[in-house]
Image (cartoon, rainbow, N blue to C red; front, side, top):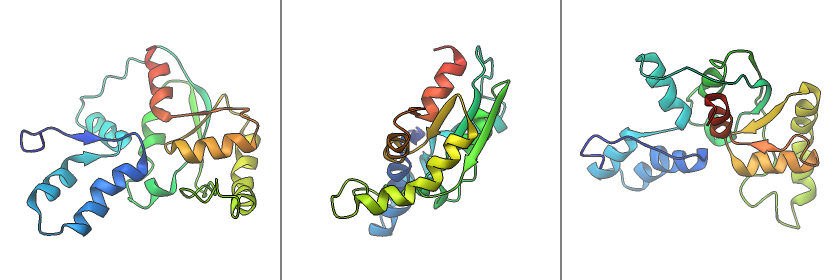
Length: 172
């Protein structure tokens, strides 16, 4: 499909990182891996490119209000920039509070008995920022990070994926 010109995306930053950085490191001489790498995008990176080219429909039906957005570590390491916030900010009457701090989940770190307490401690500053934002929505591009943070807040607010927020804005 990459040879046919298709672009690819994944809704989880660690999956995007795998296709864009990890697989090419494991197979540096494989031209097929390089082709997929070059056609793989973070969803909001892709939408930002479409917007820049004048191809993104922005006839949003519903504002989102205040959003507390935890920027996932796997997204930051890709050096994509704040594309999720930029796209969500296109929705009228939407205000983004970006929180660029680790959720403390780190794969299985946040669910192992031995590391759970420290994981909760690492999440606390993010939880405090989410609570202080008094936002209508809390989001993180990483479902595990979002769920971990929301758990510490008793799911008030619950974590929502930014693609789900975009769907709401479109009225879908």
